[in-house]
Amino acid sequence: MKKITKEVYLNWYKDMLFWRKFEDKLAAVYIQQKVRGFLHLYNGQEAVLAGSLHAMDLTKDKMITAYRNHVQPIGMGVDPKKVMAELYGKVTGTSKGMGGSMHIFSKEHRFYGGHGIVGGQIPLGAGLAFGDKYAGNDAVTLCYMGDGAVRQGSLHETFNLAMLWQLPVVFICENNGYAMGTSVERTSHSTEIWKLGLGYEMPCKAVEGMNPVTVAEEVSKAVERARSGGGPTFLEIKTYRYRGHSMSDAQHYRTKAEVEEYKKIDPITQVLDVIKENKYATDDEISAIDKEVKRMVKECEEFAESSDYPPVNQLYDMVYEQEDFPFVQHKL
Ligand SMILES: Cc1ncc(C[n+]2csc(CCOP(=O)(O)OP(=O)(O)O)c2C)c(N)n1
Ligand SMILES: [Mg+2]
Image 1: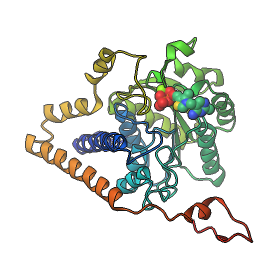
Image 2: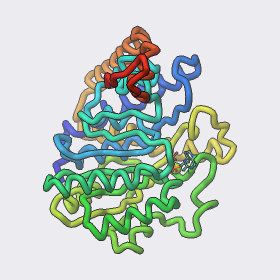
Image 3: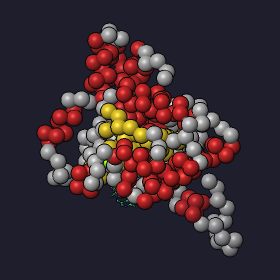
């Protein structure tokens, strides 16, 4: 595994804080109806992404996930201004404003979405890995899903073929305890999700997911296994989301006390504690990072606000082409 140095801790702090504040801003502008449709936020789960990125080779590895997908592309190198513009439905967005919240995508940065069908991305992730193996590349695909997705048939079909073909893929279940308002306990006879790998003889493990260090350690092992031809791994990473499933969630299925318990082991606070204990940064340097994060979020907001909506005929550029129709050539 790559060493976890002072720089790594400082980057984790800045990145996770930025992701948190970026999404807090999205929540605020959603209430103002500047962002419409669904909005599923990642607050609380940031250590899963931070630890995973540490384990990846960002020059070649790929990532695919479900609809809780705003900050992952930023981690993969996509310009956050474009992500925010996409949520606003503006033409400067990652998909020219046509994808919206659940469909962030960047082929250039090997972020393959953004999928609204629960479990739909699982076979697609294996397909990306199949493509790399077929082409003789040593890239690895990280394929994320929620605890609600693991009971879909697509997971089982995919696990079988991924093992049969020894695909270079790491399947990661982000177990945040709930699928919409339904707890894992209410839907699963066995709540130890990681054991689903056993039926396919796939290496599998449960991982503590509120700290990027534990995530980085286990994902690194899995990525190394996949890259060296050792096939897939299934990790159940235990995490928690602070906000509701989406913005329209009254959260009657859990107590405020439960949320507060998890905030005590907040990933950003844990990383900041290590920075302070080891004197990796002075108080002034930490507040300079906080200030910079604030500035970056503001910059994203201003970019999205000042961008234009797409022209109406862009609709035809993407979905419709017919010889005798006025808009005949796909421009995207
Ligand atoms: C095939 C399918 N069934 C149902 C839904 C409705 N739905 C949207 S999100 C969701 C819950 C998924 O929860 P989980 O996989 O745990 O992900 P989380 O939201 O916790 O990140 C459901 C049932 C859907 N989008 N697709
Ligand atoms: Mg869940």
